[in-house]
Each structure stands twice: as structure tokens, then as C-alpha cells.
Length: 172
Image (tube, rainbow, N blue to C red; front, side, top):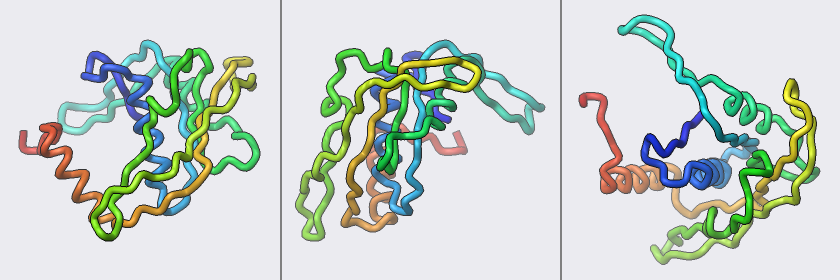
């Protein structure tokens, strides 16, 4: 479970959640075919345990709704999907929210990956203990295999995180 909030620095929590979900799907090199649910609203953070050892979690209707959106059976033929209440979408543009990826080719040149996402028409589904709800789904239609190894990609991403000042070591 991931939380995106303006209080924690996200300018557009829905866009950030979609991009995080899309990157999970796009980097699914072992073909787990994840189904991701997104919902927004107020949640409560809860901590259980002692100061030495504790667990933390989020609670509330948005947490339940996102979890249940992730279990919605996708349309036939879908490998992976990102599902959310249709009201979240509005008049958004898919290519602005999830831009085409650029990967380094074996010769080091950047190449743009063929665009593989589509937004499905709204549909009404029964959500356990929540009744009928209108949802939208983003689907990835093709699988792109990056030219970099997973280790090379991880090192590159870590360097970007360091460069952006977003890494906090456990010592801090």
C-alpha cells in the first residue's frame, strides 16, 4: 500500500499514484501481471506496538475501496490493470498522466517505447460490502522488455534518487 498526499509533498496525488502503478506494471519483468487499485479520501494512520517494535497501517473507506478495486476482474484479455472510481478521472489526458517511456538502447541512445496504455470506458461493478460503483481501468496492452539489466536500471534509478535529494539513510 502506498499513500500519496499533498501533506507529504505530492502536488497531484492521483497522478502520482497512477505513475507509480504504471511503473510497477511496466517493470513487471517476471510477468506477475499486477492489478492495482486506487482511491482517494481521508484515512487514519494507526500504530500498534511499542516504541521499539511497532506496526503502522492506514485505515478508512479509501483503503478498502482501493483494495477492492484491485480485485475487480479486468476485461477479458487484460494482463495488468489500474482500477479506480470513475469520478477520479474527470477529463484527464492519459498521455499527460502517463507519458511514453524512454529507454537506453544497447548503444546508449534513448529510444521511445511504443505507447501501450489505454483508458477503458466506465463500467459499473459490484464491490463487496460497498454496492455498485462506476469504475475506470487503465490497461497496458503490450509488454516492453528494457535493454538494460535489472541491476543496471536499479543503479541508475538510485542515482536519480540521490541526485534529487530524496534518499534518507537509516542513520538519519
